[in-house]
Image (cartoon, rainbow, N blue to C red; front, side):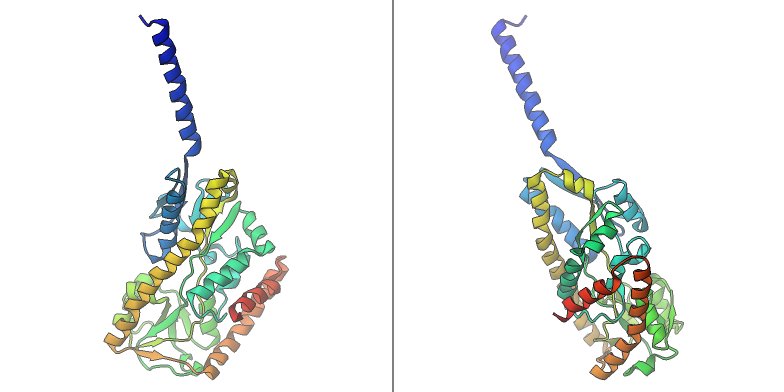
Length: 338
């Protein structure tokens, strides 16, 4: 039988325990991130973001990464964000251009992006535009940070191209805006899957393939190629990290600050990771004796001229859809030119 004093002590301990339990529960926040594939350079900024946020909040704000499409298919990540199936996700604009038309400006060919730092800069500027925020707002999505992809360049087998006319009739693995550009240059774009590209080039079914350097390594196209377009830089894909706007708004102020302040360190880590990829890339080209094609300014201008009508068509189409398309394109080009 409890004495009055023991009862009071026990009751106080119970109340105190409930208080701390409630406080701990209220302070802890867990966000889930929908990703596809495995951990790789393409996801290193999200890994670093989670690490930084945990450190800044003493582990009270946890960002859990789910790979392999465990939460959603890659092409359905934006939909999942829209109804709050998870708080954060990565997707590529070209997966569903009709759902995020404002972002597809960054997938237009031959914008002139020379490096990843410039791509980060232009992406951030675009994200600040009200029309872009409104566009993604339809899906309850807030753009958090880009996943800057290196410019795609071609690795091929056979005669080494030195001018735009050398691409006439060439069968190339090129998708999206890049495919349109190469078609305008007289090439024949194909939709060979990434995993089939090595065999396609080796057998002569395809003459060249457009990938970022890390993908040329991953899919081993460098093992069958004898040339690579070092400075063509015809375009790339745009794959942002977005968060659910309701989840973002519901964060305690200090957690929201921790998240926002973790973006730049995450991007810095991402760029450093890709720098290591290039440390492998250049020696690989040298070791295999692959010719690194550098087009003259005149030839690059000729490629750019082919890209002009494609960009104009995008402006016309998106303007008809209610976007300030020319304004967005001018913003992007202005930031790129500095």
